[in-house]
Image (cartoon, rainbow, N blue to C red; front, side, top):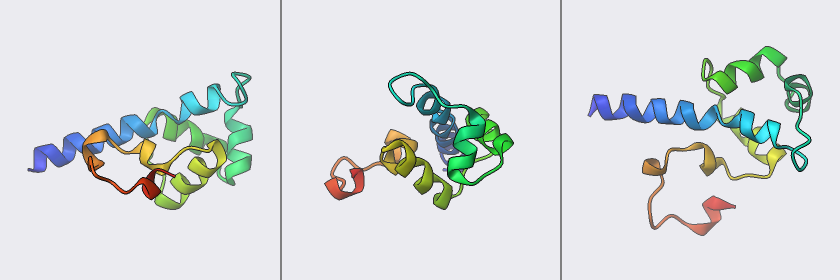
Length: 93
């Protein structure tokens, strides 16, 4: 069980590291600098870098701000194994 939890935490880190993909593809591919995203989210620019590399994991509050900024569901940051097949459609919104 512990091994599975550690594996899932790695998956979460990998999903969160996809913040870079959202940032680079922002505004129809024009992209957004780490500094600009940091300013919008009210965090330090090096925090964005650490999220993207998986060095740090954003808090739930940070994930909410990231998901609202990019217009994606917070669920997109969770590994597929953590999302039930019968999940409520409201959670995807």
